[in-house]
Length: 414
Image (cartoon, rainbow, N blue to C red):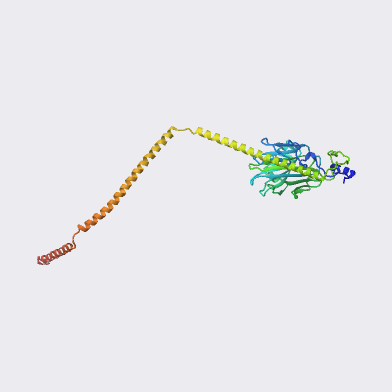
């Protein structure tokens, strides 16, 4: 059944003119709202991409890699080239941060009066004085991450301030690392309120903040020695409901008469849609493989550089350490002493064995000789008894003789 021609004309009317009096996207301050971020992979319309001189953010089909997974200490930024003319707006920002367990870095969302010439790639700690808003996403506080808001009218120099963290007007905890999916940050500036929403929940806000129009949006990221990789998927700026559209309308597609064969079959449309999705997925996979290959090439080059430096250092040390004749002669003398000690050690071992043998021989011979002398040369027991008796009789005779002489001797009387 062919569709009615009148209904077909209604279906071909673009949606943008219908939303002209309602909420619409500000093309000059947005990217990532379609299937592709860049039409040619060389740049993003109305945006300027910059790096720190050592590396430039990588532009892929569906994302911008501000800081690579390797190496660390890299900076990248992307800035709108056109200021925002609307005073009430909403920003839908999608990003992802991946890295090792102890990785680090920070991501800033800027809304500044001067835009890129004032900031370029610095972070909130190195920017100096600025006029506008800064939302900082980092690991401050050690609670797994958080979002903080900073306001400045150009009178405070953040680079020389002694406590930049104390200048935040709002904050909330937010674990943003290694989630496996993009995080969604929404910033709303309405007529009577300012609000920051992350992943569908309110982070912080105020009814006393009113940011002026005519400022520039920007995103900057910096990685640490152990780096976090920050990837930007989407940054869409839309107006508040009821704002008159300022951008030109898109022309409607050319109308075609409802001749036979003009209506596409639903099956062919489904197949075409599937093929388009497959092509997008294949292109994305190819880009990811290209990024991985580039990272591996960087690692390989770093390893080669370190190896070359190590070899050069080894050769330098080898050339500096030249042979010394005195050391060689001393080494020869020490070797001679060691050989002499080895020979003396053998001789001492033989002498020690001889002494042990002599000592054992003497012990055995002396014991046997003394036993023989005691058994053969000792006097008889009878002889010993006779000698004792004779000696006692001799003593008794001498005592008797002494008594007699004393009794027969003259006596003296007083």
